[in-house]
Structure formats: structure tokens, C-alpha cells
Figure 1 (cartoon, rainbow, N blue to C red):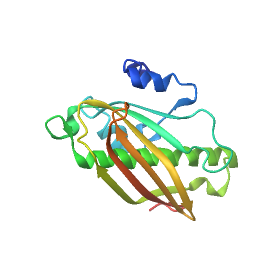
Figure 2: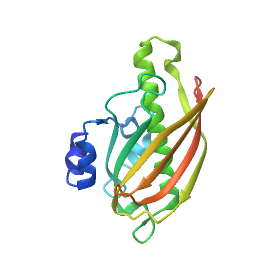
Figure 3: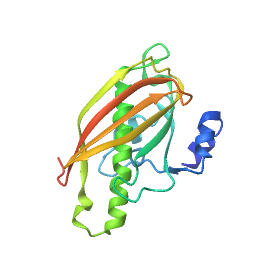
Figure 4: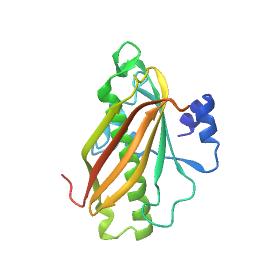
Amino acid sequence: MADAIKHFNKVPWAAAMINDSTWTPRNTASRIPKPTFEDSFFAETLGTNRTIRYLLTLQPTKPEEEYPQVREVRTIMDLGNGLNGHPNICHGGFVATMLDEIFGVLIIANIELKIKNAGPHHPNNQTNCYTAYLNTNYKKPTPAPSVVLCTARFEKKEGRKIYVSGTVGDGQGTVYSTGEGMFVETNAKI
């Protein structure tokens, strides 16, 4: 994480977010290789100098009192040209993948706090979430290489269904894509 902070501090809009005391950098679990090969797509396949060169997630410094304790996350990604579908433009499927991933980061942040608050032996500590649907709206081409800001916001929870929304943009107000998704919470491994 220290390398990513150092890297993104060279980008003015990213540095402003990193140095904003209301936001705190957090580990992005999907960037850590695991012996089960879980998250290998983001941790290994997309962890190269031509794909996602650097990645940094920020969450609110002060969690909310009630669920969800983390209502928004921001992930800054430095994209290489190995993600292109057209010259200097990200593949649309990868843009949808970024939204799916940032939605997962938000959900995982809340699961981690739930486990922390419940204690290590609580029966709900085996909670998993799976994407049920993801709608992506492409507003403008996402340039690559470039540094982008992905955001995810909690919308609502109905039983085991979690609804989220988010954006991919340039960190300075331009939105390239928007998305919304629904995830299903389960205690079973599929």
C-alpha cells in the first residue's frame, strides 16, 4: 500500500484524496494472492505493468454507527495499455469489471467490520457475496493508459440482497461509466 500511496501522491487530485483526513487508505483484499487462488484475477492477472499498475482504496475514516458502517469506498487505479479494446481506450468489458470489483470492495469492507464487531467465532463469519446482476452505462470512453477513480456507494439491503451503485471517472468530475448492481449474501461456498 505504501508504494501505491507514494505513486498516487504524484497525481494532484489523487493526492488531495489521500491527504484528506476524512478518508483512510485500506488494504484491497482482492489484490492479495491467496493459496486457494481466490481473487487471482485481480491479484495476479491484472497486477502487471500493462494492466493495473497501482491500486489504492480509501474508505471513510469514521465508520457509521449502524449497518452499513462503510457506505462508500473510492479506489484509484493506474491503468496500463494492456486493458485496451481500441487504441488508447479501455475495453468495455474491463470497465464493467472495475465496477464489479469496486462494488465487491465496498461489500467486503462491511463484512470485515461485521466480523470484527461480532468476534472471530461468530457463525456469520463465513458470509460470502456473489454478483447477481451488474448494469453498466457507458458515458464516455475510458482512456488507457490513465489514472481513474472508481467509486461505490451502498444503496440498500433487502434480506440477503445488497444493492450498490458507482462510477468510473477521471477523479476531476468527468464520469466515463456508471453502474448499479445487486449482490446476494450467502453462508455457503458456491
